[in-house]
Image (cartoon, rainbow, N blue to C red; front, side, top):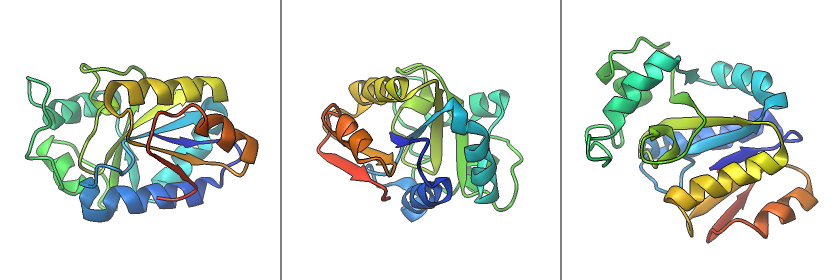
Length: 180
């Protein structure tokens, strides 16, 4: 998960995430799998993301793509790994803008029934919108406990105290700050 804190430079954070998630079409397992943002930043984040080539899926589009991403047994579908966002949208029967580089789907829950909380080795991200920094920390811990303890967490912020608060609690081997 990548947490974009309220004091973050949204464009810089999304540039980093875009670089990471589109390099080899997201096949690097250390690339971001979800974005966590506080409600107060949601509108600005979504507008900036749209301008940069992220496409926010509607609920029905997210369901169609989610069904494509994972096989019925829960395993990642090999046909989606390393494919472009436009290719994935076409496979799912979705119409997205031609400049789409990353598909973004709202996510609330974490677990095997919630594809946007899982590792997706393609340019697809879950978007968790939470009420507070504490809720962001808890959501990141929940995501990592489900499918990522010991792996990677990223934070975008200028607040050293916030970085330290998260660093002391994230069960990861890579704790990234303001970088892809």
